[in-house]
Length: 301
Length: 301
Image 1 (spheres, rainbow over the protein chains, first blue to last red):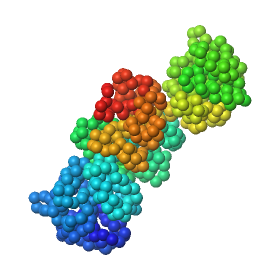
Image 2 (image 1 turned 90 degrees about the vertical axis):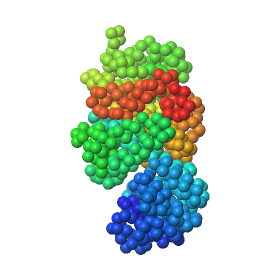
Image 3 (image 1 turned 30 degrees about the horizontal axis):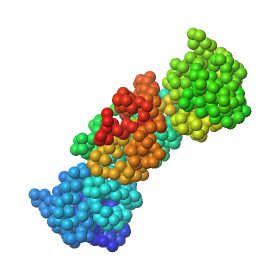
Image 4 (image 1 turned 90 degrees about the horizontal axis):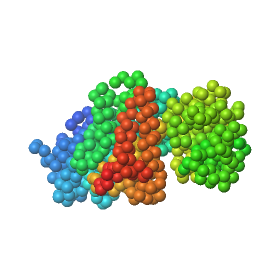
């Protein structure tokens, strides 16, 4: 069992750290929110006054933070704190599970490599339910050796662990996937709405498209039309699941990436505009399948 | 075994009629192209000078025509010819397998009903390969009784036979599916291109998205990036498969339907614009997955 420093105990990080404890690791935690720290201490975690303090003798650092600037600050340092790459012991593997821009991930990986350290970008999907159940998906970027080592820890928090390529590739693959997911969700919502507007039963239409060439993850697992599937956000007032605000964040990252590489992503750009409008209409904390209401008759927007 | 009048022996209709003959039905055929008629006669079909002549004593009429105006002309009549609804015997079931606008399908169904006849709209998917192999998918609109009767004949030409709802519902479900398919294809193409532009291997990225929330039919069966899958059009110079011109036709029908019902389909509208541009750039007779080239570096457009 390893000594793990876990930094960032939000809705995702908290249950992820708890699963590392359950697996028998020696886990020390840090978060600016003392309540989150106390909750993990009650489950057996150690703690410290700073991220630097708990990272100093760790075998692994695992971080789960909101954005690229936080990740750069943590690993590369700020005006008031040393970066973890100056603090950790030789051989400590740095694993960042945040969803951030690929450029930040690559910058941290390069700075770590200059110190002889390995850094893995390992953004997750699966939401808070997956974090609690230990069934997350990790999409990793980094060297083969670092990936194999990271996998031993990630396997305690997730089920599917992918190696997308070198440093930053985990972030790129995740935003490609989530950009595509947003396109599937909007496309499915408008196709179902068009059918409903012409008198079709959305359940019958879903069943047909699911096994035809329109088949996709949203029809299979996450139908956006209320009443078609049980136990999905659309049948629970669009509560739970994956928030519109988080999809807006990921679509922003995808468009930043597209600008950086001068790539053309017209569907991704359109999906971002639709989700930004949907968030501004007051739906930011609802599940992202609520975009269906944007197309359905009786839309409150 | 039934007496069937088959009208429209194009790339799809020819092999479909041949499969009805193989199933043991008594099939008479009509097409304006004498070569197509001769080919079916060599396989055992009867023929006649007009569609009306072969339909007069048929138990079933099956038609496979290019557009709504041809279907309306055939069944409702023209300046120079009686409509089949005035010619066929009582109890003859009218099955139109063309992909046309739902309004035309409903108009023919209503006119048929006024004469005591049943009409089924049964557009297909599966392409010329599916037509030859007898593995087409039929998506039907019509009454329950007519659907059950039509199924006995359609099963000789296809594998999946869906009942989408009342008259016109088959056409609506098909254009909803194909609109969604176009969105999946474009969205997948731009997601893969974004990943490639950031150094990812398209095969690795495809494998990750396929089993994640970006999973969809195009990743599973029809990857648009050359070299990722064998035996798909993208690995054969985008030959074969489903032509861009046909996708443009279906997207036009979906946008006509959206105008008719005042539905909002921004992704479908964008997909139509992209496919129209792609066709105008000279790609009309290539497979629809060639839209990938619109996003990839080295695009010839």
